Image (cartoon, rainbow, N blue to C red; front, side, top):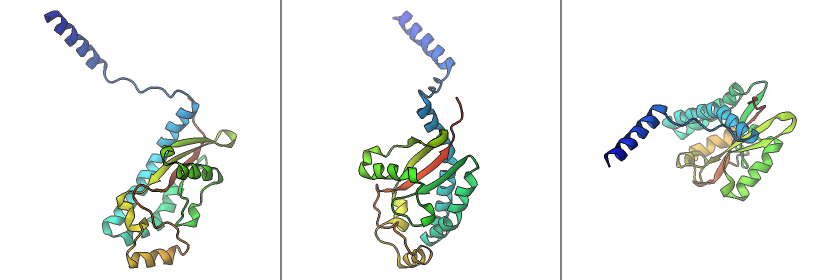
Length: 187
């Protein structure tokens, strides 16, 4: 018994010294592109969420103003000559966020079957890929996108977005998507 315990302790020490297992290499080009797309979109997504939270810390009115002013600037800041980032929806607040043509089928898929709402990579033309992450309604989002808005918020949205379609959502609904178009780096 002592030898068995000593053997287990030695193997455990060797495994601990070796450190955690290395991250698995992507199995194929699509998996590689998906990892790249997620890495590219993350700073944009985080910056946008930070801006919205800062606005919401003041009030939903401030959040709408933050979103109205900062969201387009953030998309421009995180886009380059070789990649474009953005967000879109099947029910837009800002018409400038209309989906690129390739994204329409993805939105239809997400809407048609909620079980398909995992991040997705789409092959586009000329070696370009599209990467998409769904935006699912959270309780925090209800103040500006839920079924009942405060009257002053509703008036502000009507003023800035007279054709707004982005209300009436419930927690768990598909609100829209974050997306990026990019040329994957070679492995």
